[in-house]
Length: 92
Image (cartoon, rainbow, N blue to C red; front, side, top):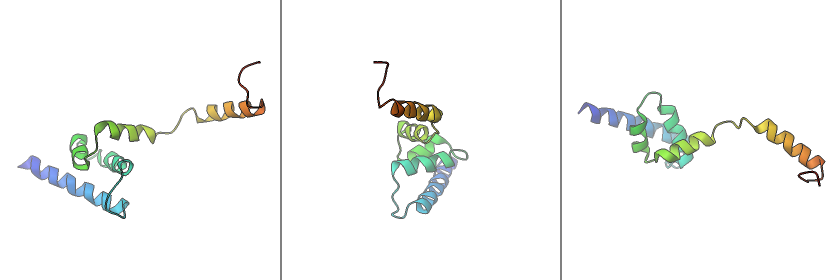
């Protein structure tokens, strides 16, 4: 009984978040992943994924995709050198 009550409470909190973020009432997978990540601190991930009908792998995919690229400055420097050398790689 207690577990069922907690599930309903979690579901209610999730639905509130969806209504705030989505004007159409339906959230896309990326939005669902953001909501689950926010609520993850207070509710169990397993329950949130079940409520949102979001596969675990999809959640982690969107979580990783939202991370900052730590090699961004290096990639930018490489592209600058590439463009300066008439878009050629190598020494020939």
